[in-house]
Length: 376
Image (cartoon, rainbow, N blue to C red; front, side, top):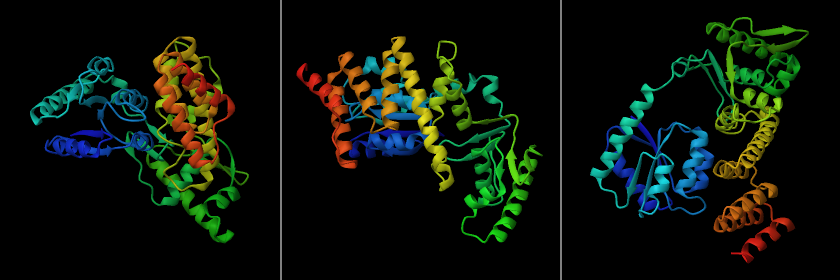
């Protein structure tokens, strides 16, 4: 089954394409989007293989959206849909599988699906051995909190066992006092009862970890617990370590930095209701901001304008009120001869500030906008 998403700002065209694709037994339409902003908030956590993108959309074109989608899902396939032939060259420069002209005939769509099947089969055969071999333990904290052993999700005995492991992961390799755990996980329960619940939950957690080969990893000393693991991967921990290392970005390691950005499927444990995770989430969002800014500086120094542009777009998405980021993006558009996009991104930013904060952009931003308008 080929899992696809559809993005088109015209609802009628979107429904028509969904209906046509549903006629194929080997296609599953995972989700449809008529608003590009909704794509940003949702797509990082979706499991899909193919994106059908309308090219001409407000705010962000399908061509630009394709680049951003590949930041989060680098192995996806793109099919562009448009009413115009003018974008064909740009579409194929982005290594799209196909380019469909509206109105789309079922026979033409069948050829596209044939190509997709061929591409997906080829990619499956070309997977490197290490990609086919499962990691021992994988902890995903960015977006949804999930734990996998040999690529199979772990089933916890209770929701509190899951939350307790999430709490220890947040404080990985750090001693946490028993009372601190109780205050965070059982805040409204009598202390003596909460202590019993903690001990019961600890027992369940140790059994769960031992069942997958991780015995004696939850230690207790001086009324403190500490989680110590070997042979595991944790997306948030790897992002944190990469940023804190403050390593100079170069050709030899750029892939690791790009992969860290791609792994940011959402804020830290944002799909949970763990209030104690909020501080960590803010800290990691700040680290992502630092990482993106360092990538932007690298792309600027190496004259990689396309990569710089999309990193700036991402940075503004994660920091929607940042005047500095907006100014960088406006100046980038202006310097690359794309004044229309500079004007558009300013107006969207101004509208966002007014609607959500009740303020206007600062003087420097307004002056930059005035300069771009004058020279248009």
